[in-house]
Image 1 (cartoon, rainbow, N blue to C red):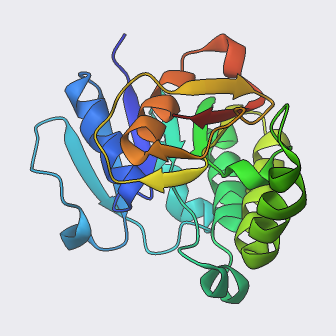
Image 2 (cartoon, rainbow, N blue to C red):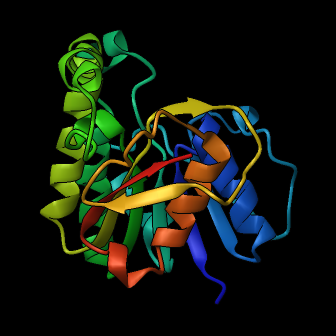
Length: 218
């Protein structure tokens, strides 16, 4: 089934992969950007580029979600300093879900991060005592922003899924990644951005993922 999909954060590493893969799958894509020149995707008859300078403004977001079948968000702060100065994921998803509720659009997938979720089942003492606590401390503002994002999604009327990957890699899509619903993948340390994009698109139509956070990893 082909859909009309709006993609927020379309110029980022995961976002551009979502756009490419959605087009390859035959979907019609609206790529939401602040600067169209930063979208490294060739022109396509099913690609529409929409410039929105403030994705935390419900009224600005409403036109790009109205009439669509689904929404994907790859929004997130690039680093802890940026997240501390101006959180983006939480405020943006609050606006996006409000706009989706008004427009009657329900399927939503958004990229989060593994450390926002629980420790993986069977995690060793080094992971429990060192890796996760260190990550959560070093990037606490990034993860706080993503936690706010997940809370905004859960409070909305959307059929939402938060996809939680570990460390991202610039490698080709494999399609063979693992996933765990409401959990992190045991032993999952890395995943290609292209596989995260695959997961974001796949969860839009997977009823088992609706209303859940889904851990993904190679």
